[in-house]
Image (cartoon, rainbow, N blue to C red; front, side, top):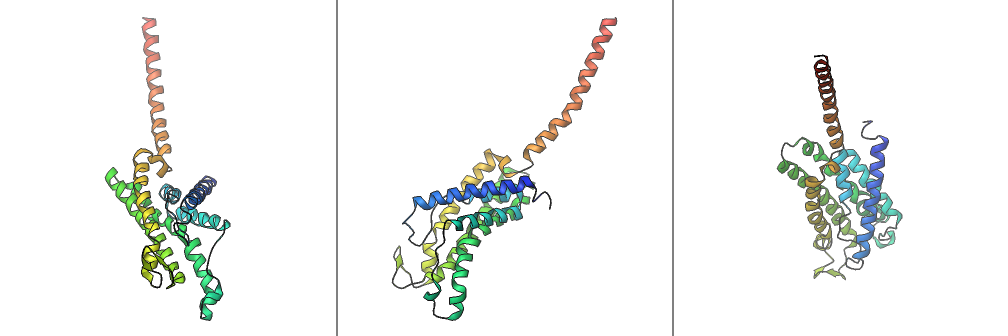
Length: 237
């Protein structure tokens, strides 16, 4: 547990959450107006995926939560309580929207870390890519599910998106497909990272290399000592 929340791990979580926030802000600016009620396509989930595989489930969830909270500092948009008819929704509606669209949206991406152990134990690259795929799909689809559930609050017969009437939940499934597009983009990128930059996904990658080098040092020193003894023996002869 100490390793999971060491100063180094917390620093990595903060750095990657900040990178995720910057990527989210960039893609939101690029796609502003395409999804009028919010939504964008990009790679903002990548930093959370990296931490989830690099450090495990709990750090991955924490990174997603930090990213969500920082994102909220830029402003949130929810339907006001007066929009709802019954008292329960008037009291809880805005809170539920914030939880689904902001707090949980990136938090659940960290569940990709559930496959971190299997990824690191995989004995072939093929299996590593399988576990990467499982985590990216799980985290991405959970984020999609949060946005779809939040879409319930936005149902309105007077609007439509891509020809789908806004009065049914089908509208929410279609409108929030941008989250699925994000999964499609992030999946090959994560596989490329696993293939060409595996140390990003394994915090012990370089440490293992160093341990191997350390094991070689005594052998080299012993060889040097043997060579010196042979030289001295030759000089005496």
